[in-house]
Image 1: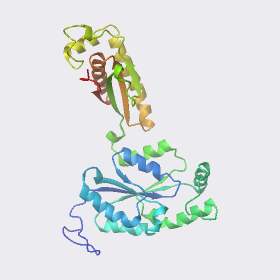
Image 2: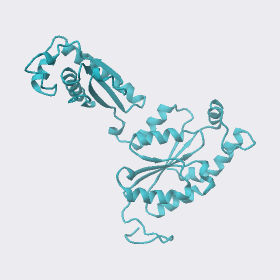
Image 3: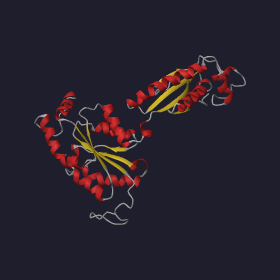
Image 4: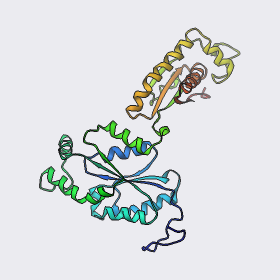
Length: 302
């Protein structure tokens, strides 16, 4: 569409649409919520249960907002029928305005959908006084044209939650967005355990640089303290063992959909031993190709 032209609605057409839009719809019980969470995992701004009549307005807001909103996903279901029943028409209007939405339709066999509803003891939103099968049949008819317009149809009949999530991340997320990111967090036990730690390592078995007068006022980020800590008996085996442990579990965590892992390393005050170990462990993990960085919760707190 040429720059500065207008649509039949009288609204100015976007001069350049660089917003990535995804429209998610499909059968109730098909897995729309899982798709929405997976899109959030790969950086999309997700708007759930958006009325179809507001899709164009939402797309234009995303374009104007920029930033994180440039990757926006709109999730629609039968509850939005109260505002409009013409989902296919709303998608056509987006395309006429210069947007290029990718439409994802989640589907599943009727028998699978019925089992899913029965397992959570819910009725179908269009069931009324009839059977689950009746509600599913009505919804299929309402969404038939939208299904025909879909760019991606995902049959979830034989997919579990993790398999569906991985499928969406493969479609819409680059490799980096699916990688596990690890924070190696140093802390002082006297200030309490980090509540978000997935692993906790205790470095207090190593001699404390605090009792070495020339090291006391320095931190584990400085070469003299780091060399002292890492040169102690058992330090190398300690770091190597935990690096091997994290390396062994990374692929499994990624398969299970975990995107962030916190490995906490503690010493008494969080100034010397834990800091040096955290820096070294993060460096070892990066050498293994893992996205890892060190943070120091209690450094400077004393």
